Image 1: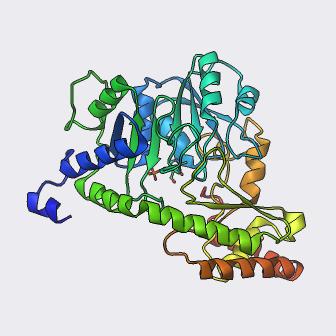
Image 2 (image 1 turned 90 degrees about the vertical axis):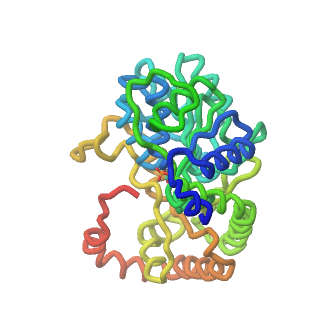
Image 3 (image 1 turned 45 degrees about the vertical axis):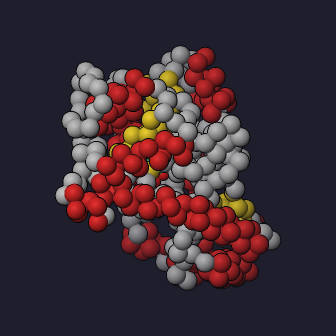
Amino acid sequence: MQGIFDREYYTNHGPVVQELEARLEATLGVRHALTVTNATVGLYLVARALGLEGAKVILPAFTFIATAQALSWAGAEVLFCDVDLATHHLSNATLDRALRDDVDAVVGVNLWGGACEAAALGAWAVEHGAEVFFDSAQAFGCTTSDRPIGGFGQAEVFSFHATKVLSATEGGCITTNNDELAERIRNMRSNYGIRSAREVSLTINARMSEAQAAVALLSLEDLAANVSHNVGLRESYHAGLGSVPGLVIRDPVGVVSSNSQYLVCEVDEREFGMSRDVLLRVLAAEGVAARRYHYPGVHRTMPYCDGHGPPAMVLAATDELCGKIIQLPVGARVGTDDVARISAVIEAAHAFGPTLRAEVEGTSAGHARMHGADRPD
Ligand SMILES: Cc1ncc(COP(=O)(O)O)c(C=O)c1O
């Protein structure tokens, strides 16, 4: 940060951004790491650089809303598929079930520090003449049995938002091994800092600033310690919650090492004794910031659903997961003592289920209004 002030050079692909890109390329083993101002804009740029305006792009509805919104901003026609209940990720079977027509591209979303089956997805895409790229916003620092996430498909997009294991406060990065695609994206990302000129129809300001890059470099220093801290928290949650009926921790799938930046549980209402939403309110009352990320399925949000009547497509697994997933706190500011306390609250919630439920359900309408229950999260 001091160097930035000394140089008085704050943006436009300066030395700190260049250093960060070189470090990311080395860490992820990719030819190009293109920093951007956030992952949403990164996804937008990839879609535009692949020429997907007007194209049919299929993606899972069980994702953060930004995946679909970025494609819509890019002018693509968004089609949704379901996910596999066991893995939470799309699969070739869920893609086949959703297919009504030709598709031009498929977006694999790597959730919860896990990954979809990239090789199988690649084969599906070849068979259908479709491009494939990945929303890896949640997957920085994860490795499959083959290689680090970052080198699959035409491109992958990471988020360096403050909530992520690698933070630039806001930020993101597109990785690709396709030289031509990288040059097109460099030309679109900014009017500055291009290596060689390409003719592109639109440019945008998606630059990462020097200050963002400096924070990301500092965060990179802490990455290994933060990941191992998260792994420790995961073990503590398993120890604390392993015997609670109706609550199952879902560990990351499809990777040999995960950033463990999410702790995802499924709540089975009947077995646990209360719904996920009632449990959330019990936890909130105890000062625990648990979330129902992702909710609702993106197919149930505007502009993909007009909000009146059922959506065009029934995505049963997505709806089921959106109704029962709960994210428990992890990260550098959470300690194993917090995990023990959170686990004790959850155990007590199970033990006193009927009493708590009666109390909470008595005021549910007021609570829904207060918390803007119709907003996606
Ligand atoms: C799956 C997924 N895609 C996209 C994004 C958007 O990332 P950003 O906030 O950097 O735009 C997120 C952010 O949490 C995400 O989880």
